[in-house]
Structures are given as structure tokens and as C-alpha cells.
Image 1 (cartoon, each protein chain N blue to C red):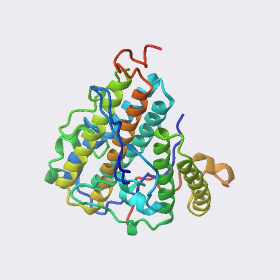
Image 2: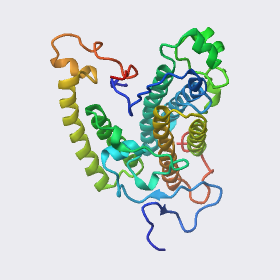
Image 3: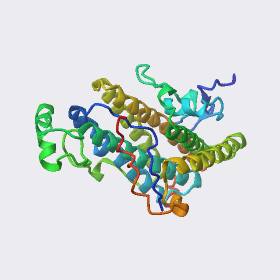
Length: 141
Length: 198
């Protein structure tokens, strides 16, 4: 059998009847860069299957918060991939790198804009957890 | 245990309130294929799963769905904020308004309150994972339908993201089913239920 492209996956040649078979994703590569992944809703171009070609672009995702969202989104995508591909060493290395980047980004974000988890209160001077707007309270500047 | 993160998974920034859109997008909050049902389905099914990959994927997707519930709630909140009684009437939102004012309540687009009857926990590995794949497709179709009806770019931006997550989750549940069947009796997948017959 010829090698599969990144948009395809392997299936058993002879499989028992009366079962649904989804092709296994072969690799965590190719992958979008983090903001593109967030814009498209997936890290993986092979799974990027939009409705009526309606797609988002990453231009509007340039705020510091979006940068953090993008890193955390890549962590989420790699985590789900690894749940079903736990022996994939490359994907695991990518996950670890991205967790480190996210931690660094989070530290910088929290210092400037305020807490994300209650853990961020450990160095605060007073209880500011409820001071910043809640995530749903976005307002146009 | 869960730790709250004071941020959304993906930004929701709706400039123009529009209660007409909220009337049907509410279905992805508490409707038959909405995010509340999705998170409850996966976070409940995982307890009886016999293989670590399955407990893992159900936990991690179930938690993500809670984040999606928050995003859809945010859409409803922003579409209905600061609305006047006149705007309520113009949008035909009176029945909802009378019961919930501008609160966010989990219900179908048709008005039925969220019900656990829309989700299943069968306690059988093949059955539950097959249900989950169907559930992702139903949610994907609902988001497709919302994209057909909504003309607000700020709303559609978020809906496109949520819709694509359904595609990714479908793939992962499909892979989880492959992993499960590989551990089962290859001559008869239905010989026993590994979630019960240990």
C-alpha cells in the first residue's frame, strides 16, 4: 500500500465485520503555527475541514491574551492527540516544549494584566481575583 | 477536581447585540446536541471505561466541552446585553424573557429545558464511543445550521472554531474506538463488554 498523505490515515486491510473504523492519524506533523491553529480550530491541517469554505484567519488574534490562548490551544490539541497516540515521542516532545512556552507566557501575562487562576494570587498584594472583568464581559474599546 | 481559568478557550467579542441570534444559538448551550450535554456525556461515561486511553480522551474532551459551554454562554450574554423591552419584542424573545429575563438558561432552540434524556451513558465501550462519534456529528451539523442562519461575523468567527472542534473530537473518538477494539477478542468484538466483564 502506498504511503498515506497527511490528510489520510491507515486502516486495517482485513477487518472484522460489524464495527466502525476511523483511519488513525499518522503523525502530529504537519502542524500549523500556534495562532493559525487557534484561528482554524485545529493544530492539524489534515483535520481542517471547514463548512462551505468559511475559515478564520489569525490577524485578529494578536493581543497578549490571544497569544496565551494560542499556546494553550496547541497544548490541548497535542494532549488529545497523545491520548490516542501515547507512544508518539515527537508529539510528546512538542507537548513539553509548548507547556514550557505557555508557562512563560502565562507568567508575563499575569504580571501585566492580572490573575488567570487562583494560584496567581500567591504574590498579589490584596485579593484582586474579582477585580478584572470576567471572560464573558468583553467590551469594545 | 477542576481549576477555573479566568479566560476563554477562544475569544468571544460580539460588537452588536442581536437577541434574534440568541434565540437559536441557545441550543448549543442547553439543546439536544449542545455543549452542556456533551460535557455531561463524556465526563459521566469515563468512569466505567476500562482502558487508560479511553478514560483520558473522555476526560480531556469532556473538560474542553465545559470550556465550550462557557463560550456559548458568553455568545448568548453578549447578544442579549443591554437589550430593551422593545428589542425583546422585535426579536420575538418574549417567552424566554418572561421566564429568564436576560439570564442564560440551558434550553433547546425550541424552548424545552436541557434534559439528560438527550445524552446516553450505556456503560458499554463500543456503544458509548459510537454514541460519542454520533454526538460530535450532531453538534457539527447544528453549527453548520447556525452558520447558515447567522450573518454576524463576530458570532460566526466563534461558531467556526467550535464547529471545527467537533471534527477533531470525532477523529479522536474514532481513534479511541480503534484502540478499544484492538484490545478485544478479534473473532468477536461483542463476546463480552470489557467495561463490565473484567
